[in-house]
Amino acid sequence: MNERRLRRMILATAPPDEIGAQRRGWRVTRAAFSEREPTPWPTRNRRLLTAGAVAAAALLAAVSPPGRAVIGGVRDAVGTEKVVTRAQAPAAQQGPTGPLRLPTEGRVLVAAPSGVWFVSGQGRRRRVGDYDEATWAPGGRLIGAARRHQLVAVTPSGRARWTLARPRTHAPRWAPSGSRIAYLSGRNLRVVGADRTGDARLGAADDVAPAWRPGAENVLAYSASDGTVTVLSTNDRVTRWTAAGSAASPSQLDWSADGERLLVVRDLGGGRLGLVVFDGDGLRLQYLELRGVPIEAAFSPNDHRIALVRRVGPRSELLVLESDTLRRQTLVFSGHGRFSDVAWSPGGRWLLLGWESADQWLFFRSQDVSKVSAISSLAVQFSSRGREFPRVQGWCCPRG
Image (cartoon, rainbow, N blue to C red; front, side, top):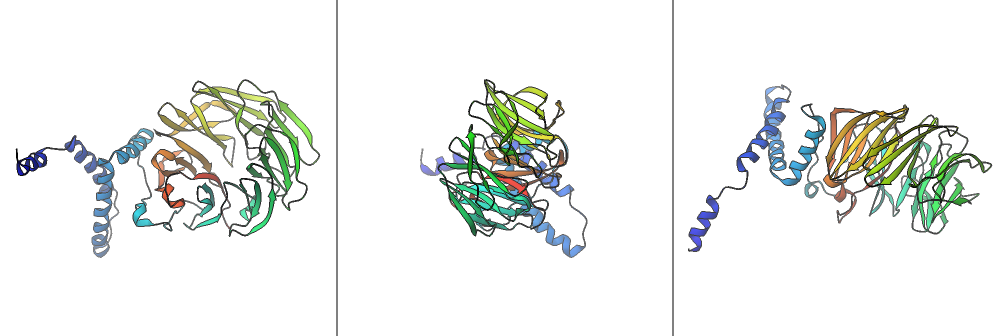
C-alpha cells in the first residue's frame, strides 16, 4: 500500500459520531437563531455576521469534549428552560486585560496564584498585591490580606496601611463593626484592632476560618482545637455560649445577616455531611445529614436561606436550603467535576458559583436557573500560567 492510497483511505473514514456532532451543533445554532430580535435592515445584516461567528463557536463547543461537558451540565440543571449566557472571547484573543463583567453592581474579591485581585461590576479588574487570602472591610474601603507570616491592611488600589508580622497567618476576617480583624496564626485565634493596636491571642483554634456575628458588638464564633464551637465577645473576652464538639469537627462557620442563626457545617466522612443551625443564644434549632462532601456554604444577605455546594461522587451540586427547615431544599445546579465557591451578591439577587472543572464562574439570578450568565477562561485571567482556578473571597459593596 503506497502513501497516496493510505491518505485516501484515511480521508474517507468518518470521524466517530460525526452525524451526532452535526445534529448537536445544529440544535445549539438553531436555538440561538430563534432567539434573535427583529432589527432594521442595516443592523440586521451586521448581526448576521456576528450570529455566524457565535454559531461557529457554538458548533466547536458542541463537538469538543469540554464543550459537551459544559452544555450537558447546564442541560442537567435547567432541563428545557431558557438559559442566557454571557459569551467570553477565548483566552488567546482576550488577553490578560479582557473584561470580566459582572451581572450586577458590586466587587468580587479573588485570590489566585498571582495574588489578590478584585473585579468590579463594570468589568474593571485590579491586582491588589502579592497576598494569599483576603477579606473586605465593611464598605469595601479597605482589605485585610494575609501572606505567609504577615497580616496587612491595604487599600483596593494596593497601598498598604499597616503590616503585622505573625507566623503562618491565614483566614483573616474583618468584623462588621469595622474595628477588628480576626485571623489564625498557625492554630491560634488572634484578634487585632483595625488600626493595628491591641493584637491578642484568644485561644487555641481548629484550622477553620472564624465568623463574626453581624452587629456592632464584635462577637466572634470559632472552632476550638477540640472541635467545640465557641461564641465570645472580643470586647471583654467573655464566652457567650459553646456547643460541644463531635467526632467531626466543623469545616465552616457562617452567621445569617441578622445575627439570629449560626450555621455549622461538618464533614462526617464516608461521603456524608452534617448541617447544624443554632439560634443567637446557642439553642440548636436544626440538624440534618446529607449525602456528599461539603465544599462551601453561605447565608443569603436578605434572609435565612443557605446556599450549599457539595460534591456527590463525580458530580457537584448547588443547593439552596431554608435554615429553619433544612429539609426544604432546591437544587439550583448540578454538573460534572468540582465546584469551588459560592457567594451571594450584596443585594441577594444573584448567586456566584465557581465551577473549577469547567474553568467558569456561573451567575444565577438567585434560585431562578432560567437566568444564567457565565464567564469562562478564569485561570488564565488571573495567572500567566493558567493552571489554578481563582478562589472567591467575598462579594460586596454595590458602589465604591
